[in-house]
Image (cartoon, rainbow over all chains, first blue to last red; front, side):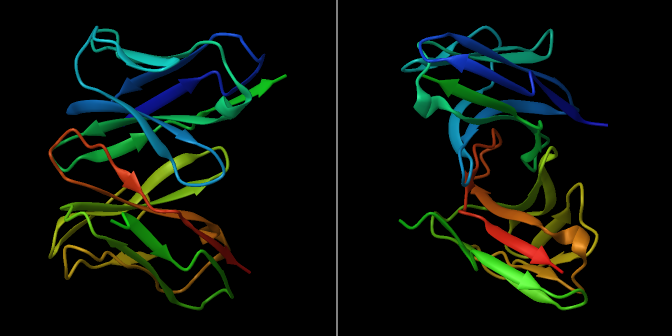
Length: 111
Length: 113
């Protein structure tokens, strides 16, 4: 059975801290891994990772994929209160581009 | 471009009623899908379509029907609503290039009493 597991389930940090969110997966016909940010509405796209070892970066956020060990991490440096959200990891599998989501990591950034 | 649109935003149904959640996209995307999101469960795939006239089941298809008569529209039908179908429903689309970046609609919050 295809599985995507995210950890931790939730965490609370102070503004300015650096956080690392984890996503491990066991799926058939892996194509890519996606990270989304979800506030009180629809998920918004952050990164798409298809190759091992190549870091994707956008401002204070970065992500990397390890296809041998079957995991990805999402790093957020110098966190801000606006980073408070649920971060979702999803794996794209098969030719039909089906997504399997993890349950998400709820991040709360406090002042 | 409006992107992915969904209607209605909110809906309350009584057990046994039927209804259709509407989803449309104007990006000429081949791939469209429906997810439900429940607390602690993440998003789960209900049904998906890889093009007009082609649909298939996802992880949790029971109690839902779909059809895809046009590239733009992908409605989700609840045949006989049950309280277990209380959830937030998201429609998504992608260009179907294979790597799967998907664009989500704003969601429909459905309550079945």
